[in-house]
Image 1 (cartoon, rainbow, N blue to C red):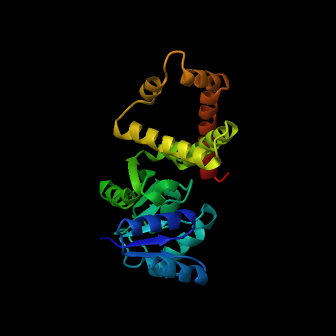
Image 2: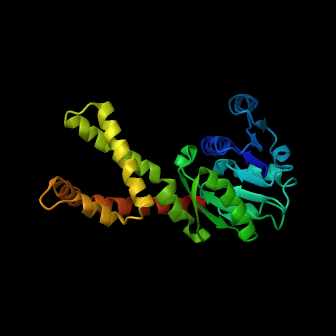
Image 3: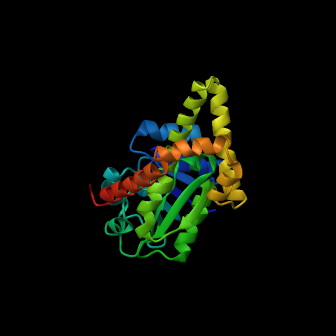
Length: 266
């Protein structure tokens, strides 16, 4: 089992840490700028933790960069003299291109960029990964090995990473918003919040599993549920008249546009 250094244990860094640990990956060192946070990580997760990014990088096969974009320059400076081309740098820092990281590390260090999402904490995450200039199939395979412990992985060209961010990175929020609206509708119809939540969440889960495990096309599933003159078609008509489909197209395009702005320093 390869040693993994997770540099930065905010929301996404700790999600990766918890997901890897619960899947049986034990050789992990994590970092934080705070001594109190380091102590908390060690106590709660039982992992080696330190405030020194350079110390964490030493001996690690995979170096996960999981800090916020505004903190990345300081982090890369702190590990510049410790990281080598024999290691794989796996960055999950939002909107930061691989070229930006490569410029601030020794020449030849392979960098793989990933965008995992929130369900990684329950091993149902989705991550897109892209290779930088010095990363090849070997480094992509290493990154996949790490991220497959948290869900599914797709390889994409780096030019598609902003779309990955808009679709699956931000995607859980879209489904949460939809679930929230449906739960409120159930309450409006006289169903208790508890029962409405159970109905909606299990329906979302079951639908996702049907689409994934049975390989159904969304249109096929929708048509199977939609009887002529029935309840579902009445609801679908209202959604189409409200422009829900167009709203999703516009929303996801807006998310990609914002991802590109962030990548260019906007």
